[in-house]
Length: 127
Image 1 (cartoon, rainbow, N blue to C red):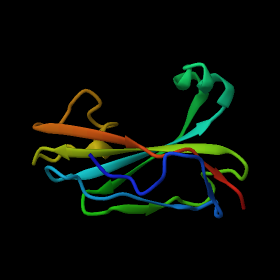
Image 2 (spheres, one colour):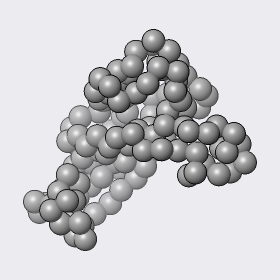
Image 3 (cartoon, rainbow, N blue to C red):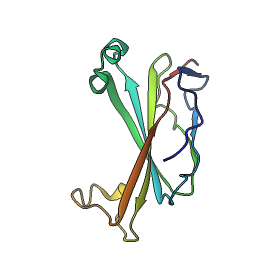
Image 4 (cartoon, helix red, strand yellow):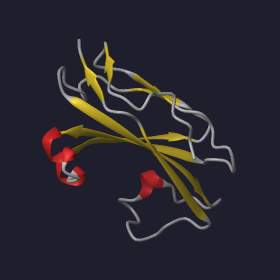
């Protein structure tokens, strides 16, 4: 599982294009990472365990397994909004089907396949 470089409390990003980084998995080797950016739409719902209803997907960024950080592309995050990122470490088999190929083959999963996820703390864009 990726070890996140973040604290478990709310953080503030001084740029609308923050850098998100993680460390390599302790076991195995990732062939790619999928970083899902989610926007909190209602923090009050999150307080009463209704987390899925309180989050809205913003983007999924897929990078190769040797990459351990990304700069969020401009225009995705809005000043003043709260976000969380889910980092999925994926090991997909040696065939040609990768995460980015889901549109071409939506019901196929490369074999062997393993995935581990980590979630950042909530962060807010301040500038």
